[in-house]
Image (cartoon, rainbow, N blue to C red; front, side):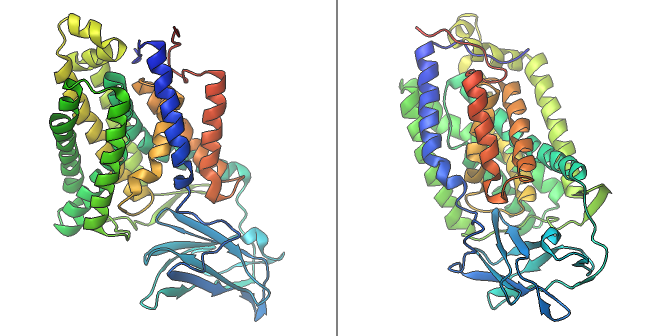
Length: 435
């Protein structure tokens, strides 16, 4: 059985209109952490640079991509074989050389291949020179690349789904589009870092404790803020504006305490294990996927089989009728806030490993994708949010095969718009009567 809503048409479309407007205003910020191929960020404080030569001969036009911490930029070597890319943080980065841009018959011959890891040094710069020579170039077929991207997209989509399900639960039971949900994602990652990185607790203890603390945060927010505002009769528009203000306030509190740099959770640099074709996953990646699946199945069982889960679906369908039938609406909403915050906290930890790294605005970086997943699946439908997240995650990863990595989020948003033009209620949403 799927969560559904039975709101008045005017309220339904008002929510969609407001959500669309605010997401449009936020659209530009989604790509603020990326640089285009035309601009290699010379004005940024740190640099990754190098030379590409074959037996002393400079190779011009070789494509180089630098990525890490949510930042991606690319350039090509000049006539002297030199390249330079500015980066925003003193952290670790991945440097990739596109071997398809090398002359015929030569390849990267050093151990580790055409993708290497570098760390910014004390001088604020690092030099990476690839060893080029005659050799057989390992060509990965398009099919293998697609399979690898689908698997990476599944991992990203499952992580995104944990956050989207929580956001959808809150919207389904209260009608609130909670923009502070992004900070719940960040809170989970920051708490895990404090427990595992600062207090040095084992990470297998730090993560569950961080999820529990995240759930407690959800309880505190509902008790101290949202429930009193609901009782005072504030409308959904006012509540949404409060959530935006809360999001900004908490975000900059995070920046004050954790700084503007990127911190890493223990085990973030676990070595990749080659599985098949072009697919390589670390133990952390595999554990993340398994954990996400277990939590999602447990959530589905709770929603479908427990008394509280059934009450949640009833409130989402018709809160007035649910209250008239004897359901304690405030109690169920309180539980929903706890569950949503806990799922968001776990999503934040997995997002910190996927990026990799913890940053003060990391939740805001994927907030638009979370809203896209909820809207794509159908507003207020928990299983729809999960399905939408999987679609968005896979589209984001697979689209990077045909469009620049800086624009990979665009594909998912274009599909969102197309689907909503054909099916405005979303994939699993229910049609609403207007008027």
